[in-house]
Image (cartoon, rainbow over all chains, first blue to last red; front, side, top):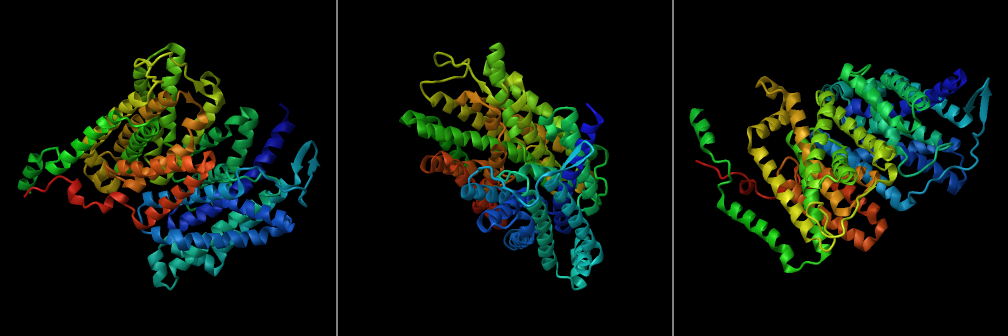
Length: 288
Length: 337
C-alpha cells in the first residue's frame, strides 16, 4: 500500500463526491422549499442519462453538447412532476408524501425497463476520452471534466439562490410560504421553479456522467441513496452543506473501498450516516 | 366527564355489532372449508400468497399506520426470517417450528438496534435509514459465504411430507392451513393491539408527538416498541415463505420489491386500519399473479408500472385507502348511548 494508491483513491473520491454534491443539492433545494423528499431522484438521474444516451445514439450528438437539451428536458420533467403529482400532496401527511414520490420512482423505473429493457449501454467514443497522468496518479478525463462541470454548476446554483431575485423569492417561500404569498410571491410558481432547478441539477450530473458511466435502468438507485445520505449529512435544506457532505461521502466510499473491502462501499457510507445522525441529528449545516 | 369514563370502561373489547361478528365468523369458516371443495393448486397458491402478503402488509401497517413511521426496508426482516429457518434446519436439523421464533427474536433485536438511533428523529431520517438497511442486508448476504453467498440456500428436501420439517410435496393444502393459521393469529393480535392502551398510545404518538409527550408518553420508546412488533410479525412470514419455496437467495428474500409491495398493499387498502391490508392484498396479489400468467415471466415490470401508478393515484385522491369507501360505523364498535 503506497502513498500513490491512497492519493489516487482520494482524487477519485473527490471527483465522485462533487457529482454526489450536485445531485444532493437538487434534492436539498426541493426539500428546503416544500419539505418533500423526492424519492424518485435516482430515477430522474437515470432519465437524464438516458436522454443523453438517446441524443447521442439517434442524432449523433455528443453528450458534451447535448447537456443544455438534457437540462431543459429534466427541468420540464420537474415542472410536470410538480403539476401532476406534487401539487396535490402539498398539504397531505408526510406518510402520503413519501408514498407518492416512492410510487413515482417505481413508475418511472419500470416504464424505463419496459421501453428500454434492463440492458447496460454506454456511449462509444465520446469527445472526452483518455486520461491525464500527474506523477503516478491517473485521472480519467471524462471524470475530471464531469466533476469540474458539477462544481461550476453547484456554485452557479448557490449564486442563483443567494443573489438573484428569483433565488431570494425561493428562499422566502422556503422560510414561510404564507408570508411570502402576502408579499406577492406566488408559492405555486416558486415550487414549480424549485422542481425545475432541482431536476436541472440532476440533468447536469447525468449528462456529464453519460460520458463514462454505464447507462441502465437501475443506475439511479445508488446515486439517489448517496444523495439522501448527503442531504441528511449536510442538513436537510442546506445547499452548501451538500457540497461538504458529497465530498465526505465520495472520500469515504473510495478510501473505504481501498482500505477495507470494495464490495461493502454502501455500508461505510451508511455507517457515516448513522454516526452523524446519532451525534449531530440536524446535520452539519441543518436548520431542522 | 366521569360518566364518559364509566361508559368507556364498561365498553367490551369485542365488537358488539353482531352482524359484523357473524360475517367475520362465516368468512373464517369458509376459509377453513375452501380446500375441501377440491381447489386446484393454483387457487391454493393464490390464497397462500394473499394470506402471506396480508400479514406482511399488516406488519408494515403497525409501524407506518399505527405509529406513523415509514420504513422503506421491511424486506430485511422478511429475509432474516427466511434465512433463520433454512440455515438452522440445514446446519443443525432444528425444526422450523422452533427457528421461526429464533428468526422473530433476531428481527426484534435488529429492530431495536436500528430503532434506537433513528426513531428519535423526524420521519425522513428513518425512511432513508431503512431504505439503506434494506439494501445493506442484501449486499451483506450476497457476500456471506456461511449462508451460501449469492447462490443462497437450497433447503434439503425430506423424502415425504413432514410436519416436523414443515415440508409438503404432495399437496399445497397443508401450507394453506399453516398460512391461514398465522394469518388469523396475526390479525387477531394486531386487532387486539389496535384496541389496547398500547394501540391508542401509538396513535397518539403518530397524530401529535408533542401532545403525547405532555401526557407522559415516551414518544421514542413507543416508536421502538411498534418497530419491534412490526419486525416480529414480518419474520415468521419469511420463515414460512422459505419453507414454501424451499430455495432462498438474497435477491429473492431481501428484494426491495418486498418492501415496495407491503407499502403498496397497505396504502391501497387503508393505512392505519387493521382491515386495510386484507383488502389491499386481496386486490393486488391476484393482479400480480394473473399478470405473471398472461404477460409471462417478464411481466414483472408491467405490474410494477401499475403498482407505481396506483400508489400515486391513491395518494392523490384517497389518502385513506379503499377502506374509506366503507361506512365507518360498520367497522367501529357499536355506539353506546
